[in-house]
Image (tube, rainbow, N blue to C red; front, side, top):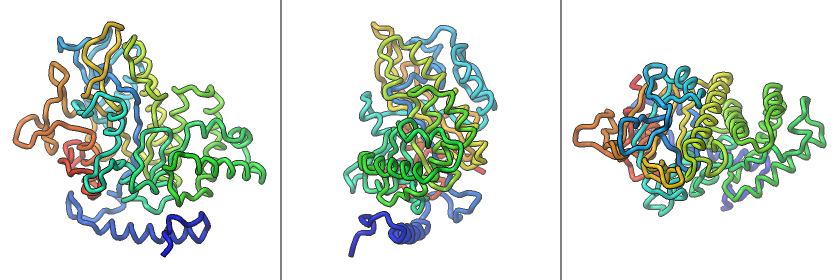
Length: 427
């Protein structure tokens, strides 16, 4: 029998694959659930997941965890510990006004998770551990979001949309499409600058471009991707008057603005029913790897990040998805507490993450590190520092909490770490 995934991209093949996806989805939704016994309803349907990766290893003491009273830490002059909306704690600095605006505006829906163990001090392994888990029986790493997409959105054209960001190909690779970041700048000019319906020539040019991107995107995209839907998404996105106005203000290759466009594209893909989760990268690769002139470089990166997050959350609201999206912002590793001889900070295996979204217990911070920057073990169910169930948190615990909340079986992607349920709203 012919493997349906090897079929050409014809209407008949797409229909056949959609039916196969539907059958698979029906089986998966009947699988035993690890959290509660109620069937998922429209009100509690699995949310869209948008992950923002900050590459190079950020210094979370400059924004997410105050260490000004810890003598082992070199801290930035002018930084102050303060609280945002719903008393969420964060670190403020006059050079990073967008951080204050973010926490004062969206702090009630935001959660900071400190004391996350990255398991490594190398970029490659940190990136691997921050986006995937090792599956013992498969003997390989499985990407969290791609697995999630395979469970909750198998019939969508691009269940997991990846725009120049970490992604681990594996047994669920057919559910992901990796899109090059230059898609927005190298597509035919009439397509990106047009304000009218596509002409037949423009339509053909765009389809040619999409097909080329499809066949050259390092083999990580869905074999059943519906190019017509991607075509419509890119065409509609680039021709939107609001996007046109925004693109007109962007300089080609400006990382502080281009990544926001990627985020808005992902949000539009959610709204149009094309994708259910997406991974994007805030700025260029290695932006946060500050072995020299640490404070100036990190400060610029943090301001860029939070200025962009404000635009992305505004786009989520404008799309009417504010109750249906979970945003996760993370990095591969952390930074060493002390400055080196070049006034930089070297690699460190403890870091933080920022989450936002309706199911998340916002307005607070969970977890912490001690005076030397080592994570305090925490009870993942209650968020306390005492008891017999203490663990050192990783991003795997955080994702397991979200997956468990929505009945996504852990066994297919993890060694069943205790889900970090303290981050989830109880109602």
